[in-house]
Image 1 (cartoon, helix red, strand yellow):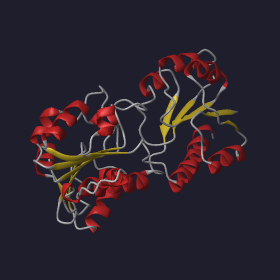
Image 2 (cartoon, rainbow, N blue to C red; image 1 turned 90 degrees about the horizontal axis):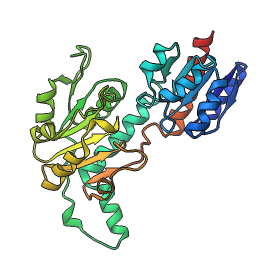
Image 3 (cartoon, rainbow, N blue to C red; image 1 turned 180 degrees about the vertical axis):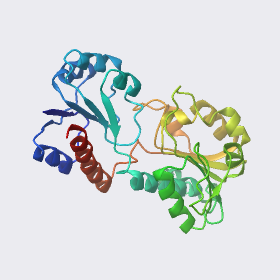
Image 4 (tube, rainbow, N blue to C red; image 1 turned 60 degrees about the horizontal axis):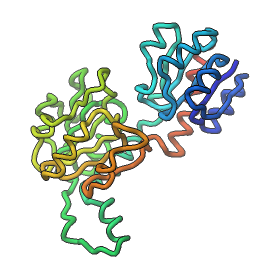
Amino acid sequence: MRILATDGIAANGKAGLEDLGYEVITEFYEPEVLAEKVKEADCLIVRSATKVRQPIIDAALETGRLKLIIRAGVGIDNIDKDYAEAHGIAVRNTPRASSNAMSELALAHLFAVSRFIGTANVEMRQGKWNKKAYTGKELCGSQLGLVGFGRTARFLAEKCAALGMNVAYYDIVGEDPNVPYQYLPFDELIATADFISMHIPATADGKPVIGAAELAAMKPGVRIVNCARGNLVEEKALLEALNSGHVAACALDVFQNEPTPDPELLAHPHISVTPHIGAQTVEAQTRIGLELVDVVRDFFN
């Protein structure tokens, strides 16, 4: 059986799949080439670079060999999941492996936006000493609002509570009575938080969860972190709120247009940016490799 891992795979994952008897090909293909290669594959493993849209799935259906698509990570918005499953191709992900790594990046960005670390770093390298421009806000004693309360948010909540933050959360499934954090309705959460961190999947219709109205409802001086999905925050409205000063700072690991984000976002002095690296740690990639082996084994056996 043949597995295509078009965006790469950790060495332990490749070795584990080969130990199970699978041929594993780790090569990136442009869409027109992938449409041919996928016809002779039993399983397709992707990260965020490869987009598995209807034309790729239709090509696979010509032979009927492809049975499983796996997103090595959490978000599956780069896969037409409904279309694939409607045509007999299963779609899976690896939700457990990268949660801690993603929470650590979100925490790093919380520090960055609280103390303007990114901008200060760049300007000092330019010979500027703008000490008075960087009056920050302490995390300890501040209210953190988590939009979504899955695995990553729970890891982050634990870390931030240890720093002395007051943690509140909203989740579509409602309140969890087994956690020591405050549950708030969405509107109240965003209106009362000093820091807001996004932890929900991409919306099915592609519409942002945080737009101009939601930004206006937030506290003046709010700081926002989005390491979840790029379409959750409307970027033009965010820029307007930053330029007006209503939003003090924002951190983005994900963007509406990847890998070519809006240059105005990248250049804004009150935005901390990273190139979608939430799961990009040695430990997370090792765990993803192990989880991929489990997913493939369980599916085909």
